[in-house]
Image (cartoon, rainbow, N blue to C red):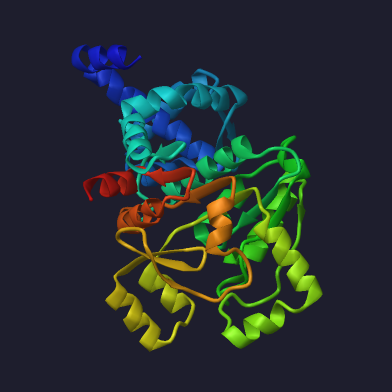
Length: 339
């Protein structure tokens, strides 16, 4: 396949450009569900005249359906997108990025989607779609699946659907709440995933950031201890990756702790732990939920994060060495490989 693509690029470069453009149109419509032509033209940075011609062609091929609310993919269009995915990965050079990241960090699987989370809402949606697809493939019957909070995990929840394996799963929050928007908290995301897949869920109604005394007191409660034991037994953990300073401020960490994090060279945060450039843990928060030792023994750990601005943070957590799968975007992958 790669050899054929290289020949095509030399002899028929225009054909490659047309393929990319038509794939992008179908892909954006797929992620949007239903979208109007003017909005799509703006999102793709195409003139309405150019887009109209392409949409007419795709409709004639039976790939699009038109409704009063806008355009959507037909069943044939959805099938074509699935069949095109391996070819598009080669065409955009994403397969090479995946292999390089797998080799560099010793990962079992890497999925790289086109674009940059920092720049495009569609890249955010595609990262969510790819994360949901990876979770479906990794799940087995009656799994306990622990999920963290954040916008990336919320995108994944939005793309989950019912499946035989996920239907029997128990979704649990990996830790307590951060006091941020309710829809981004781990509790909400766990319940959304369960409802979308037909699974079960349990909630952890405690704050994420606790003092040592409060932590010890809560862990003496039989109900909380039983739920925490379930969370720590999860076979799959799905987590995002944050910038250390951004996450410290979201947690309302004391100024002296932030100064200490900066002095220690903290770059990344994941599941309540802060990592430096080499992947060493430089600070941990007392949290009711998953601990580092639980992550180290979890069977499948899936990290989902994107955006060029997070390249260093993602690399730091990957160097920690206990992730099995990374789902990221093209801009982040390129930034990581530069480091």
